Image (tube, rainbow over all chains, first blue to last red; front, top):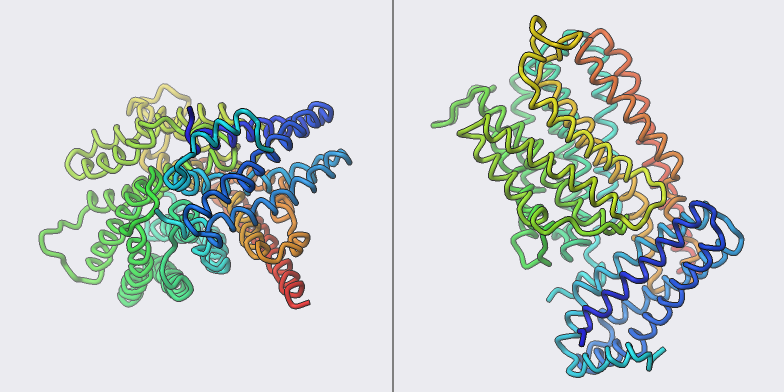
Length: 146
Length: 436
């Protein structure tokens, strides 16, 4: 069984993998490969954000009583990431290489910072406060959520 | 556990680091003029008064200036806590420090009692205030990590640099410090503490964070993260007693860092062309070259014995110039290319957390600093660096170095100003959007 920090951090790395492959393909103007990798990334990201917003954050808020704290900031950052993902979708559809690379650099840096905050602080706090955290992760693995 | 880091409330206002960054190139532009007006005699020895002014212009006026600004922002991002009362402390220390560096450079050039005293007072106050504020953060309960430990060693080194520099200046105006021999060895310790302890260890510590964050590179090996900074710092202390041996250790440690850098960069997942990566590679190659130059037999540096077609110039000056220009300056410029758009974007993005609709006004990171312009800066840097090496071989080429230096740093200044102008114009748009 894996813990919340282990599982969720591994998911961040998976997202990075697809993301960087898509970006490298765009840089080489290999648009079909870029689209495949980008869609894999977008799928992983959507599922990951849903796991946090629909399961982990509410449970954490309930366990700690902190509803306006870190989870709220994370939710707002998710919203901003979704906006950037939308812009990247458009740039990819229009095959605008420079626009895509400018946006991807932006999303990359935003994600890395966001991930750092989650991995260094939020996930360890969750592991500490959520008593059934391992079952939650097993649930994610079985794709019961999202 | 520290939750404040999650909210980014600790980020100091953007104009504070910006003022440090903007001041940097102006000092190099002043240095270029100093090179022009000093002529060939400047390159005779490191002890030439104008050469002392020049090295302090580069190391304090540019390198330390930019690193001070960057640290203001890096502490909250990496450690979760920023300095207390950032506006008053950063504004005051920046003003005192700038005036102090100017006074110091002038005091070397004109060798004037009052200028030296002014430099001593201003630098002690400016740098002292800054150090006190940073030390206050670093001894508090801050998110731990290898980078933060490295920052601690770098800051201790800077404090030692300031202390020794203070003694040396005090000695120039006639105060003698008991039990403190003021000789070449003390000056060497002062210089090495600055170049290797402060700048070097800070760069190494920052690399642990920025390579994974900006380039999705793997973490540096654990033993490098834990022991490289400490071993450099211990080598520096060792230098006080066993200079030759310590210097050898310092060069080898940097060689190890260079190989690790190449390895980590090669393993990075983000393979898109990137100027900052080019700067890191240039820096790593420089460290390897420095090892070669350091371990070359002394005969290579003696005109009558050299096996080459010409002897290498003064070893100390050559190695120091290459270390400063191709290693320290390269990394700091490479970092600036990332930090300027990153900070601009992050500050605006934080403003839009509440007012999500204003997100539409924020340009992407390449709009803040275009990739092509960054690449131009890189090539300018390589060219001006080569011209610096050429001047050390042949001092009559100083005009070429002056010109290339001017072009490079005016260009860097323009890139900074453009980035900041875009930031402030978008910021105004967001203000308007909030009001409407």
